Structure formats: C-alpha cells, structure tokens
Length: 204
Image 1 (spheres, rainbow, N blue to C red):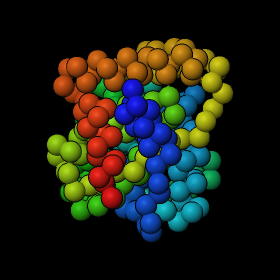
Image 2 (cartoon, rainbow, N blue to C red; image 1 turned 90 degrees about the horizontal axis):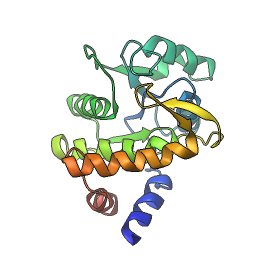
Image 3 (cartoon, one colour; image 1 turned 60 degrees about the horizontal axis):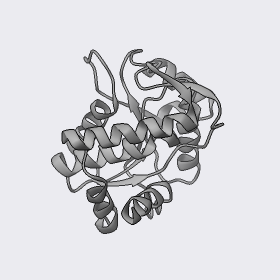
Image 4 (cartoon, one colour; image 1 turned 45 degrees about the vertical axis):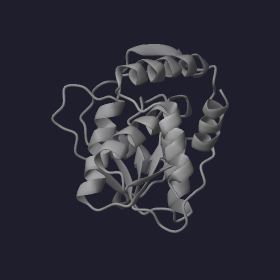
C-alpha cells in the first residue's frame, strides 16, 4: 500500500526536468475531456519547457475527435499551430492507450528524443503514464519520461471515456481505471506498479 501511495504522489507531482525537453505528448482524450490536456500543453509552452506538443495523427475513432479537430481545438485554446506535431498511428482500426504509447515511444526513438513529457486527463493519467513507461522500458530504456497530468475538471460531470464506450462521472471513472491497471498488469501488458515506481526513483 505504501508503494502505491508513493507511486501516485510521484505521478501526480513529478518534478519538472530542467531546461527544454524534446516534446510533450497529449493522449487522445474524448471531446469532453480534451481541454484538460490542452491546458497542460499551454502551461508547458508558456514556461518554455518544450517547443513541441505531440498528438495522434488518427482520424476520428474510439472517442477521439481526430487529429484535425484536436489541432483546431488546441489552436482555439491558444496553442500555436507550429508547436503541434502529429505522431503517425494510422492505419489502425482502433485507438487505445497502448497503441498510442507504442507509437510515441517508437517516434521518440526514431528521432533520438531523450526526454519526453506525458500528459493525460487526471482520472486516466496513472494508467496512461504507466503504459508509456512499460513500452519505454521494453523498447527504448534511454528515454526519460516525465509526468504532467492535465488540468482538473469537475469530478461530478458525466463524461464519455474509453474508446467512447464508457460513460460516468469523472470520479466514477477513477475506479474503472484502477480495474484496468490491475487487469492489464495481470495479463502482462502493463508493468507492475512497483516497477514503475522504481523507474521514477531511479530515472534521474
């Protein structure tokens, strides 16, 4: 239990790396949740933490509005068009957290990225970050990942999540995300919480 609490604390209050990082990836959230990560991206750009905000290049699918609409909404939120870059993920029939993480880590490796910030809506953020760490440990261990959760939104608001198939309040979705972490860990698709905690303890 102590380790799980420490993991959550570290993920939700990660220390920002010094200087400029190679990029920040915003997970593909549904329309009702996307402003959370847009706010995080704006914060990182304003503080000169990165010059590049990465998004999925996917067409609308799985609850994601698609790259064109995501980009347009980001620009409307005050993010410069030239700061936005798309990570190739097409062709794919579906879009989910692991597909995103695999594509992002491979994109980073191909370009020699050394440091990358990861952002997702808060109730999804632990699993999103753990998934990215899982893939990096397997495919690109030299990549240093930093956690930067999206801005909080009303917890009692009913939203759509999980490929557009799951509906509930953001507070209710916390438990659903924890179930997925347990399930995917048991299946071997997600590194155990203890391994992700050790990664954070030794990363720097």
